[in-house]
Every structure is written in C-alpha cells, then in structure tokens.
Image 1: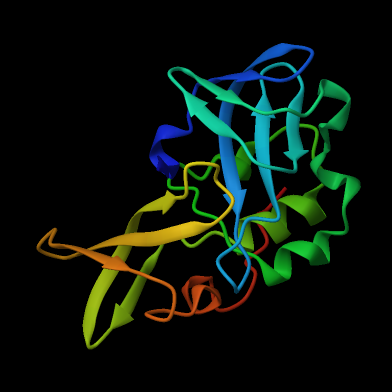
Image 2 (image 1 turned 90 degrees about the vertical axis):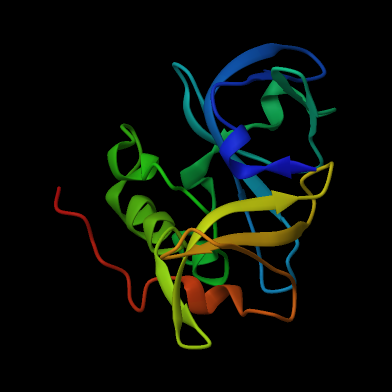
Length: 171
C-alpha cells in the first residue's frame, strides 16, 4: 500500500532516468481509480505521469520514460473538475511556472478540508492507495478527538469532499 503523506521527497526511477521529486499526487475519479499522478520534479515543475508506480524504498518506480512526463497544463483545466486529490501541504498554491487557470482548477480538487459525516466533523488525514497507486483503497479521516475512521468506496462520494466552489487564489 502507498499513502499520500509518504509521497514527498522521493526519487523517481524511470526506465531511462532517475529524477528527484518534491511531491507526487495521485488524482482520483469517482470510481476510486487513478487516471494519472502529478509529480513535481525538482527543477522541472509539475508533470503528469500515467500508469502504475511502485514504492521501492526512497524511490517511486515506473516503466515510463522521462519523455512520457508532460507538463500539468498539457491537459485541459476542466479535467480536474471530475477528479480529487489530497494535498495537506497546499503545495499547488505556490507552484511557479503553471498558469493560474490550472492552479485554480487543481486547488479546487483538493479534499484537504473538514467535512461532516453523520453529524460529526472530520478532516481527511491521509489517503491509502493500492501497491501500484492505481486505485484508492481508503480515505483516512480523523474527528475532533483524533479518532481515526477509514472510509471505503461506497462510504463517501469523493466529490462531496471538494470545496463547494473553486476559490481563485489572488495572483
């Protein structure tokens, strides 16, 4: 299993190159699958990575090549409207080199916020993915007493955890 909070400061071992990442965020659709990940390559900015990855010690490994990594703004910003991700550090708020329209769309898809379930306020604490980061296994949430609950597919609509409406960040 791979957890979101563990996807920080890792090397990225590709078929033809090794890179250093600042962070990696799997983006999740309504079926709890991961169509792509966004990884911030040190010195290269955020890039899309499709396909499975594996966690191997301090590296993420993929069979993809460096040329398969494309800029995050190579897909329409509307793509992020159907997806969610978990960025507890709010890294995308200050990403240089990405146009504001994409930053706003990505920030709006972040589920790092409180939500109410069964009358109790919870906050997403982490996400747990399959060993290849191809699917989301569980949302790990905590209540105000730090009691942990695992939410699985069918327990929660991921899109309901997003912000009610995009909140543009001042330039």
